[in-house]
Length: 116
Image (cartoon, rainbow, N blue to C red; front, side, top):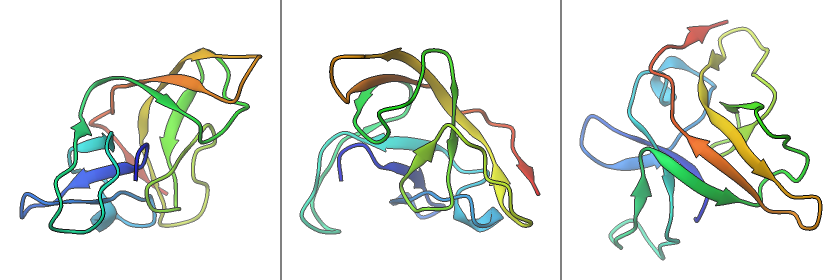
């Protein structure tokens, strides 16, 4: 779905990224889905670096880091905090709006990460 955080598997496929374990995208290439698809065999577009508009969380503020979360495909301004979770910054809020719920994220995933 548009705006979901994805990772590229070792088979060259895209799956939903989450911070629950090392195998769920800790060290893989990340991307954000730009086109909603209707099924696994349908094409989509993935942004691997750049700017994307998001409506996920309206209270993101300019400059805040965005983290991969434990919910598949999601991002948050709060880092995961449970034992075994992966902490990886996926970008920063570039622009937030006081007039609507849309924000712009500079998607630039860190290649470094830690496991709690």
